[in-house]
Structure formats: C-alpha cells, structure tokens
Image 1 (cartoon, rainbow, N blue to C red):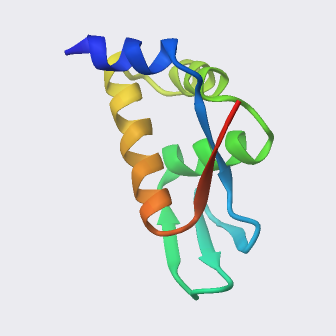
Image 2 (tube, rainbow, N blue to C red; image 1 turned 120 degrees about the vertical axis):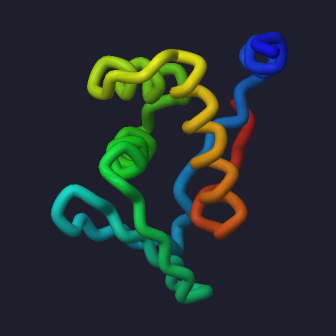
Length: 101
C-alpha cells in the first residue's frame, strides 16, 4: 500500500499553490479561507491551518510534512494520508491549484 505514496514521490511533485483569489483569516486556532470569485468558505482546523501557513510560505510538500510531523504527534503514514486528503479537498473547493516543478 505504501508503494503508491513512494511512486508519487519519485515522479515530479505536483505542488499545490493557493489560488490567487483566496483570502485567509486566522480565527483563534483555525484559519478560514474564502475564494473571492466563488464566495466559497472553508474552515481549517489547527493542523490544516498550520499546513496552510507552511504552504503560503512557499514550502514544498516534503518540508510541510516534516514540519507537521515535528509539531504534531502523528505517524508519517497517517500524516501523508491526511495531507493528501486536505489537498484534495482544497483543490475540489478551488482553493489551491497544482503546478509541476
């Protein structure tokens, strides 16, 4: 099962980048995202909020995963699964785009 993750890592990474029409506001320990073009609103829990901050800072996925694993007690497999799900949800909502590096 882990082969899927490692296969993704061997190919060029598709790095998500925030859509330029998304604004973010911190509310306590969460971040609320709003797409200005669609008015879609999305709330991120503390872990998702930290992911967003790291993403906005220009970190790549490996750097983001490393930071999240250090800051939150989570296994690497669980973290990769959670990050992949978050990225898929953000992309489905039009809040991030992918670009090849």
